[in-house]
Image 1 (cartoon, each protein chain N blue to C red):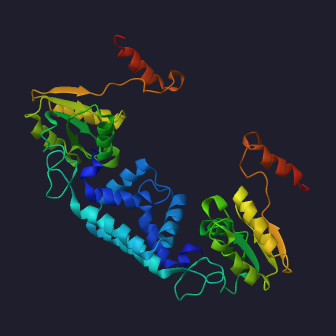
Image 2: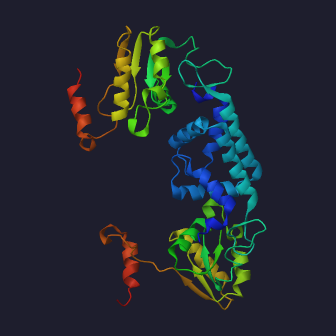
Image 3: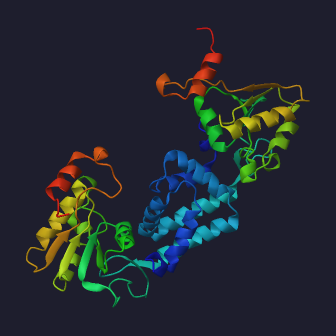
Length: 200
Length: 200
């Protein structure tokens, strides 16, 4: 009989921690120990913070980025941002990455994932319909889905959906990442960087 | 201004998640998104499980391994285990590793860390005093602290504390790990494996 089997309350906690993504099974035990060693009041604050955030944060009905309930969306309702240029990203984390670059002052559209039939995720599970609805008021749609087969397929699918809408469609440049050595790059990246070379 | 700055409830949640060990900052955002996408009831169960485990699990007063409150310790109170042989480990996770090996049927002593002056952890922060108290009723103490400078120093310190007690002190064998290739091993491991070679 396993050590953990004799500690039912620990077992229940581990079962819940198992569902948290990006926690390897080894780290899970360490995180469990961390929670057990915390002050009870600190652990209560932790739980309250999770539940409060869950209650307060909702996806913006237009762009699907997180916004505080009853507060204006910091993108869609901002006069400082170009409302005619929409950057399409897979997730809110990708939105953060674009925002950090400082190169974009338009608005976003968070898809909430990519089309992936193997995982049972079809276009109806993503916010593609909302994007098509918005598209008539937009000048340019920038695809910033990830450079994966699923990301590119999703971009292709959306481009198809937008066929009838008079909107400019662009995508991120593909090439050599800054700070990288050519010898360690995969051949497809080098191929694309060469094929899409530009004037120096 | 940062995107997250405009989402105060998210900011509070992230501040709490930051304190969870083994969550890199990139993964932290993904875990936050995971919690936001969960059903409210599921998130409540998660929090309840953490708090319940925190309330129910206490360190055994003898060996410092986790035990359910009011339940007998599965090691110290077990008639099936050799109460005269004590394996000294740094953490509860190390106890699990020894237990999984199936090679040990004695009892444990969980130190709760290692001596590390740089981190401000002295012998008084560990359960060394309890071990010394137990030692008079023990035949053998097996050191299973990690093969790190801190782990070995802690073992040496405990050995010093046990000097006056007539107890056999042993430590885990050090050598080539199973499944490893010699060419990729560090030289100290190879040195120790050679120095401590045994009859085939």
